[in-house]
Image (cartoon, protein in one colour):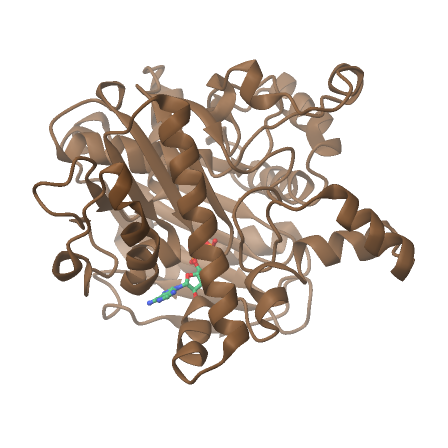
Length: 414
Ligand code: ADP
């Protein structure tokens, strides 16, 4: 079955075309046919990027510049690019059987991926209040794709649903309970598709099931979150009511005393928009270093003696380590610490700085194994390490494609 995975944001649309089936899932050989992303959507300078393994040389991207303002134009540009570069493999859009939509917020209603019926779409609309920065864009993508590909089955795969297994003591904030009842203020957690994929894949690599382990998954990218997965269930995660809480991220602050934020509001007279920008876009690695949100640049600057770059990286690693310790306590043990996301998958120095501080908890890093492991599945610890640590490159799109297939075929969602 050919599945189109769609991830619509405010100014970008990411997509992948994936061939999958129950047999391909079982042998882990689902096939990525091509990737098409659109950047700078809504401007005259939009760019369509195409990557088609097997059709174009590896890592070669074709860039097509054309203005794309509306979601319908974006979906059309995505379909045109697939048809142009895949040739016979996609002769018409009718060959696409399913479309998996990444939907950021599923609220309390959605505990698993689901086919997008009119009631489901209404409920996602109702959740816009919980994720005003994300859900409206995800839905724009859905409406446009539904109009262009009415024959296909559409599914919603939520960032939040994997965390719906968290116990109440982990997800209720220490605010008056009334505000949970009135506004559903609570921890929801995000990156669920990534944590789910990483833990699933780790178990699969070892010939076991996710339910056999207590795992800590660290998704370290531009956005960062960490998750405690106790025998298959997310029991706690660092992102909260929004993706701002928890770890230090590229431009988001992570944990901070809310009264410190109040203090800034009083002094700077921030309105809601300015506050949103302050916490989401001006903070984190970027805000602390004053240089960049990109870990590669910060590592480079640190090596040249830049103290603020060093401080930002030290804070980043320290906070990940603190959360790992907390989640070992939350689960009363841990059978594996797993890294994914752009930083987790590619940066041996950052992984080393996180893991070397955990010898007391039974993590024995093997520096030679860690070095040079870039974007591949690999063990990072010695054979004697009480808690092993691995890199497992995440693949959210693959999981979205697989969930879409399972929803269409009525198969259980693992
Ligand atoms: P997103 O959360 O937007 O999907 P990614 O998962 O692609 O982001 O992660 C982006 C981050 O990964 C950036 O901070 C980038 O600096 C970092 N990164 C990518 N490659 C490396 C590398 N080789 N060394 C250190 N950081 C890296």
